[in-house]
Length: 416
Image 1: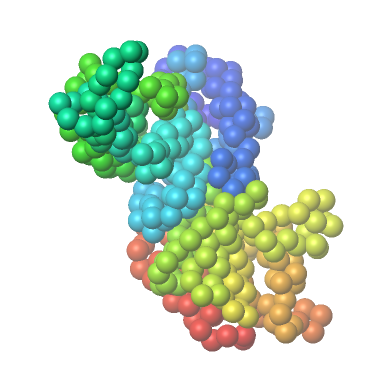
Image 2: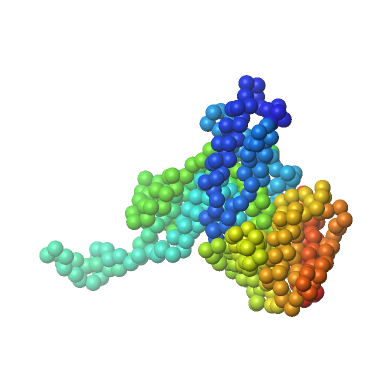
């Protein structure tokens, strides 16, 4: 507590700081599950225990109503790279793109909402008719009788002005929000601000593409003529966007980063993803599949913990099945926690094939005795278990290649 108070402006008491921290903890308690695939947000929250302040694993800024601004800085210098890589690899598949945006920015409801609105606008533009056929009065054409009058009418193609109006009004509102958010980002600490700006840049890029598409449909539509008609609900939804704080669940960001690297390591085209009730499955071509926070479930852990857990990542390719556990921690200070070790072994035991188990544990830093992609082997009840360690740290780009080689080597070698 004394160290935290040392970074505060004069006049902030320990009691005020404690109230702000507990208020942030309570707020984060409302965000227990992500909007895509039911991903559990089990990232440890900040807490105050006696005189000890536990920062948890959330990164960002929380502006307490009492005038106190809490800043939690990342544990790595290039924190933003996890966002960049996830966006580069996952952006082309809707559930994965939305996953990376919604999990990374779960505690900025407006950013999640803007992402969803942009995708709905995109889907609306693709789904709805761009033009209608309408009958208009003309000098020549078909003779019809309307209201006792004889008219010559002909069919013409007219643009769907309602659709274009809805998209343009929606994008105008979202653009104003993003401009305000830019000003908000400029006041954030460097690591956090860079991460926030990456989200905004991604959204602005999608917004510009949609705006161009909508304007091309009705090129001479003036602002005063905008009428969303039956599509009024989209701009109405956009008007409700707004937020005052930005927090990232770092453990889930790291898991998403490792998920992206896993998919990238497979080097296959034709990605297809499906959001499930719990977790996400990614088809990577042929018989390849990657699960995120999904099956297999561990019977052993369910018996120990009383609830069925989900491994971070499961890679399935033919008869190969590999568990990947992503730890946003430095393990160079000691051993893997007993709870983590038990969970990893239990996952492996549940998915054993031909009495051989394999898993990869990634971390920011590895134990002192580990280097490269080493293996720890053991014989458990006549079953040969092998767990490889792989350093994955956004501060060191070469670790991404090392991880790709590690997982690729396991899959290409077949059963160990």
